[in-house]
Image (cartoon, rainbow, N blue to C red):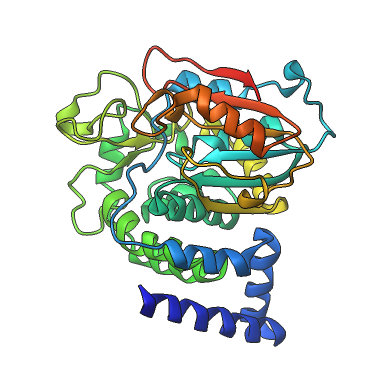
Length: 345
């Protein structure tokens, strides 16, 4: 860990020198810092929390109905009007929080993704970088899976996706090009996650006949021995997987929503913070302003004592102290029957 930290610190110094120079690398560095807003401190923060292991969630495990409810969420119904500045503070997890960006477009002063698992945070940073890099849904998917399989997204359904992915081998050219660009768009832990876990567990680099940890689409009652399961404990037989709800719900339902998400991520400062919701914190700890309301998305974490000992009641008190201007708490149930709730902070 110390050796890795030293390398990152040396990399930060090299990036600063490069940014002061000219040429492609300097432009790449300047673009990264201007997009992320807090990149120098973010690089140091990420280096401090990197650890071995893999992320639990690749893709969302919130239901189709919940993801669609997030994308069609109407802030005006809760007295948040366009032109009024708000912050978004979202659990990383399966990155369902991205589906909140279209309805909050034009309102966000800053975004923070948090998680108690550093690997989930590296995954969040990776997804943000890949979306910023990818001008369309098919390019985003191409980079995530390192496969030339996504030219016609209309072909992808829960019934066809397994065969389509199987027929498209891992493409080293796509992987290498994405890896190179990621060095400009993200930090060490996110690049490492892409090189190792995403390549092997999503792209199936060494076993194209295996089951990816993330499916483009999903529907209930798919055979678990072939597809795994989206809902329930990771310890269940056949293994937990995530999905993108491609063409079905959320920010990947259509190109317009994806473009709105990409625009927000390119134009809004994004922070990544390790946070245990059992502990007190401040808006500043999250890299957010404390003088604007917050939209806080926690998925189903406040419903499970394994994540938050005092559940929603205790966490809500901490949120009220962290965000003195108040805001909204958004939650899902993350398994059928679907439930998307909005609570005032």
